[in-house]
Amino acid sequence: MYNFPVFFVGRDLEKDIKNYLENVSKKAGFYLSNSAENSDIIISSENIPDGISINEKNISLYSEGNEIFLLPFSYENVDLVIIKAVSVFNKKNPLDEFSLKMKHRYKLSKFLQGLVVTMEVEDKITNMSHSQRVAFYSAKWAEHLGKSQDEIEKIKELAMLHDIGRIGLEQLMLFTPTRINEFESWELEHTITGSVFLSSLDELWFAVPVIRNHHENWDGSGYPDGLSGDEIPYYARFIGIVDWFDISTHTASSEFEGIMSVEEALVYIEKNSGSVFDPNLSESFLEFIKYYLMNNNFI
Image (cartoon, rainbow, N blue to C red; front, side):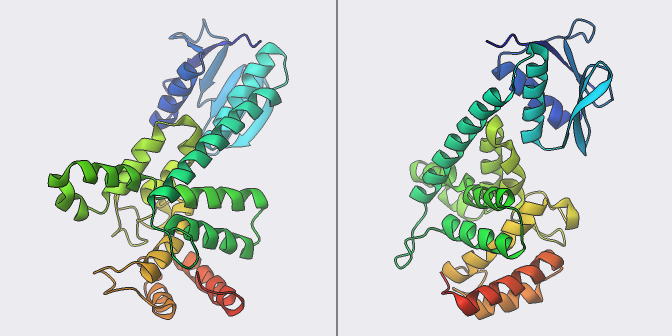
């Protein structure tokens, strides 16, 4: 059994990280103290002799003044460092605890991915839904770029979850017909709904930036936050291109004056590189998709 140490979450931490740590700690059954002096492990943005240091780049675990664990910053790695800290405190192997957490996250993610596919319309020829196609092309593009297998799987998972917010909206529209017109004219709603929903699930916080920002444009004209350039999270830019490509070639839309051919969609991406799309990623995607379609059927 694990004897959980008393944690102190420093007020100097960035607000979102502080809120995340407090929520995770409470759900895990950790005791949070209001005093650093009465705590076993302090979490701070500063380097401390015993505790966890978190900044925008790294997460470090210190014991008796020595850095014993260092990872690049991500919410998944925050969890891993906390597990390591609890294990050091208890002098036990952290792998068992981490394995249980990852199994739970995997099951939760797979359940939501299945729900997405169930709610989306499948193509009669390929039997694939929109999110499945986006995940397929995103993974193939990542392979083309030589990304690691772990990153490819992460990109595929993010692509499968990117439209999770549409589920709640479609159900709400079914049962509140007076609001249908409002939702049809307010496309950005699904990005906000999805990000709010997933932000309540600690295990899937890493997917929130993609869900919220995959409709942002490089020049700042997108939604919901009007982010531009590198302000837009990398995976949101990456999956956003594939998302647009699939929508434009499969879905009738007044914006595109009907369904585009593959050639028309590629011309549009090239024309809008540097305005709608990340110029480097759009160039990379065009290179990939042209190469892929020379040797494979379009889905």
